[in-house]
Amino acid sequence: MGFPHPTPDLPGKWPALRAEVIAVQIPTQESQTLLQLLDTDAPELLEPAHICATTWVLSQDHCHTLLVQHSTLGWSTPGGHLNQHETSRNGALRELLEETGLDAAAVQIVGNAPAIIHQHRTAGEIPHQHWNIGWLYVGDSAASLTSTHGAQWWPIDKLPTGPEDRGIIFPKLLQLLPL
Image (cartoon, rainbow, N blue to C red; front, side):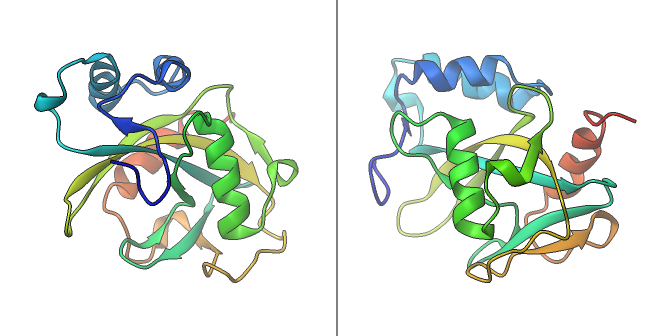
């Protein structure tokens, strides 16, 4: 499928991504489904899909999250399509830098595996799924951000318009944080 550059598409065999999905910290039905899709050799059973990475960044007090202004999703977590043969962790950090200006040194990872798998269906000329491998980080809400994608911190209890699954995912992510 490739969009707009070669991406890890489904169907397809991506062993490094499969290993990351197996290690996910919050196993869900979506993570199990993605594993099944990574194991299938029956492309006719699948609609076109891309594997993407998202970066969930919470403030040090765990009360705010970093969001970017997305043209179709509204206010969303930093993230995007992976490059072929890129791990989701590296892709998530690349997208964080591109969309917010924060690099790996500006955030601390929570756990040593993806936090959660979530998906988004994209309408348009070629409807398809985005399977997002989400990584959780804690960052300094006073750090300088770029304005390229309108990055800004938002209170978790007063999120702006964006993907509906954020309200379901945040409570799960908060369980991964130390008290």
